[in-house]
Image 1: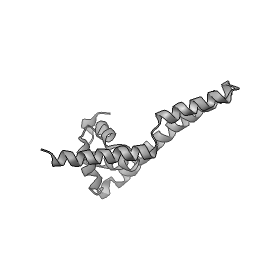
Image 2: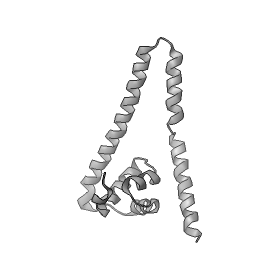
Image 3: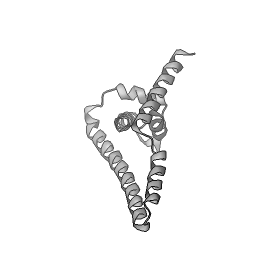
Image 4: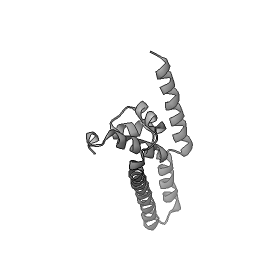
Length: 125
């Protein structure tokens, strides 16, 4: 994605939408080529009326992407179940997925830590 082709107001909509879908501000900033603090500023700005449909389309697109990733994971688990008679292999696969997938609690804690760090960054010269 060429970040320079996206207009500023479109970046605002994308940032707000991805925050609603629980993407981290750091990840959004990287995707859009903007500073993390800008992501938080965009969060508080209202979406212009003419871009609300755009926001809905973006949210749908990213939600579908998340569902597609989950579907692939489930398909891989199903294939593993079909390939093995030993439930221990399935449990091991599940543990690997679980270990490498952050919980909602961990995601929220990371966001809180980022917010605290941003506050400190704003206080310190």
